[in-house]
Image (cartoon, rainbow, N blue to C red; front, side, top):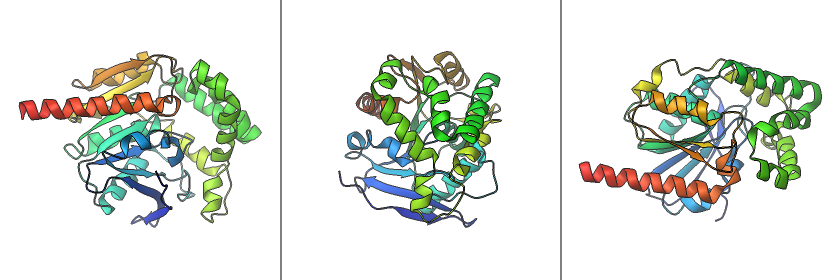
Length: 289
């Protein structure tokens, strides 16, 4: 699949967000929302399995990839969700499926709770209902590592929590180099932004420290599949289960032999989960229709 060139949308605030639209014209929309400290490239492995059935939007939130890195931080989940909603409205995207990873799942929860009936449903991975005390301590440590030793020290602190054992052992060098590129603000430099290379990463992490869904999850009526890796030490299954318990009609599954980033660790398996859930949801809707 040929990769399209970068495109940008300017929001009402003047903020520029980088985005890409791929997939089948006229097909149902699907919106993929990045995890923390990543950019649109994190979805490269899953796009081939989805693009023949969906019109797909990927984008970088503020501070990510080629998007702007404003000074008015931290970048809270609420702000990121509001800007995502404005982008969808600008692009005329209606009733999309939402796919999110980690902080992208938190953004998705905010969107689903704030705009009931606006989404077809979602598949959210590594999705806790709030940032608890121990997770906050870990992220604060990552911020300190970034400031003291740069992205490689931060990677060494974060990696054991993010990846499954086998995946990390087999790809440790590649993942470390990729993280250095992402956290060093390569995309911002390519977009012509002369800024502190770590500012976007730092303000992203600071922005999630106090996030809490605050009882809003009961507003969500869209069908949801919540996935969690069995080896995920950052958002482990027992914490992600709490999200499912607060959304009464959601489905929850633990995926064996993967860690925090299922779409990256096992993209083909992830696509199977997504398509199976969407197909079952459509069949149930038509049956009871």
